[in-house]
Length: 344
Image 1: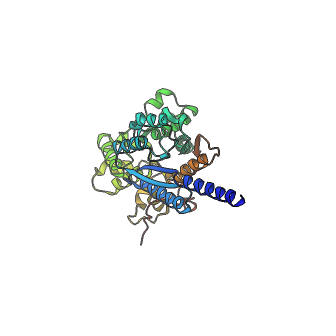
Image 2: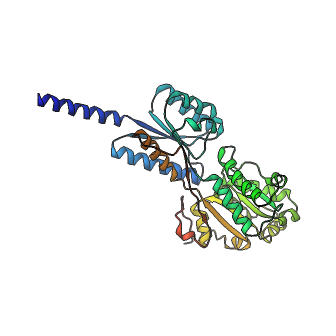
Image 3: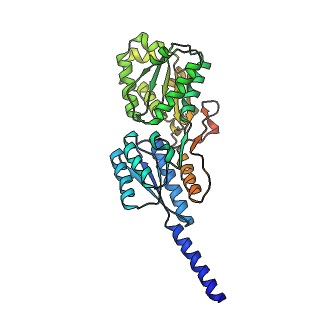
């Protein structure tokens, strides 16, 4: 009898282990279209590899070329039940209808970085950096440097997702608390969406210079870019021969405060003065250059939250990771992502 009981217990343990091993975690992220997203994909693959090596769960990273591709991936998982849980960085807000289908399917999901508000209550968690904090810290630094209500500001946003909206909300909120009127905030100039692209940031910055008078350029001393890639696009434009020399000189003589965010190694190399393209002259002409952190390794925290939930633990539904301001005085304390670009 004892042998039968022992055998039954062993079989139960084996079945339990087998069930656990088939608990799939699908990690859906965009393709590596720029540094931050590329690093998200790398960190996601590292996390999946570690999970699979442990053997308790099966994790798979699925990358998408565009929103339509990601929509198809999510709907395929829903239809075929090919994953038990999903961790997803939505491509953009065009996924809203599909995310509602996912929420109604009963498949547990964690959203990372871009949050689809209409399904956030049904998510296990929404894991993101402090996007509002990025905007708020940028505004605070500008104000500490002397920015006054009504000063000319140029914003270069990312895309049409929740991320730029939150960054702007944090930025505008601090301005309103600091004496700006709603009318002054509404008058702040913004370029078209950059798509988080360095080349598009360079193009839009060049177009802004071309369409602005020298006086308008000289008056615009505060530039809030939503990403380090965009700021690198500005630096590349300033170093190139593609823009009008008179307007370039006006910009470089204007003592501009240039804000970015994410933690790209290239920006850190620029701040250290070791970038192989040598942006020292362009940086010296700026009154300030800084980047607010937004670590792509947070995708691993999002996966950890899903595992914690699978194992019956509690996770914060709105999981916000704090930010830090990085400049030339403290850049050595931070680890960037992507390829380091240093002088040889």
